[in-house]
Image (cartoon, rainbow, N blue to C red; front, top):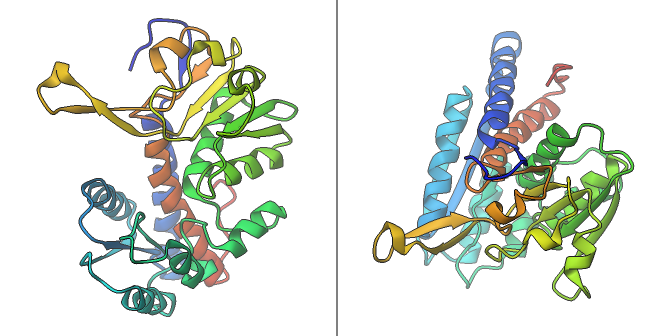
Length: 302
């Protein structure tokens, strides 16, 4: 993707491919030296089209890395009790080192009950309260894949992040809160902004690193961005694309890319940005979990 202005593009295709190559190399070592093949499992409840595509892509990437991929597709009317029973089954399966339940789940199932039932050591999405607490305390934890991908991209664009002011727009448990913790660990000064923040554009303009994770298409425009800032766009929003034909849509982020590219120093595109990093980091998490479960040290360059 090209921009009409000067911002450099933080290319998720390139960075995620590099990370997946490191994962594949580590998996090859684990197989060769320890007879261990990391396994990632995904449970999908119902027939959400976007989730089905995402799960399929995860499976392809897992197998390409030389790992075992397990997929469990359950009907939309699956009871919460049956889903939790499947989660406990994977908790006890030694071939599965990391797994996740694809969200959203149907309305009759409590997402939090699902998260609470996952073994924290196998929590590939890093959502269990124990992992969230360990991350906030600066202890080793399973880190949510999307925030980890955001951090890798920010460091690729900006190098050493120490002392920089990072503004995170969005306070979700999935992205906003954990990316704030990761940025704090990098010695950033971190502000978490949200829908109730007063004068949100003014807060955003203070950022050396601006992370947008709210799920509102093209919300962040150039007047929200400090000249030269690094902009990480987590949003994935479908908007009408009449130019493609009646009923057609296209993907855009929370950031108005063409507008903001004229003032930012570096920016992630949508698509082709953070989403690709999420899958790569999920694979990385599974390898880490497999090594921890078997008392194996990770390679130093992993």
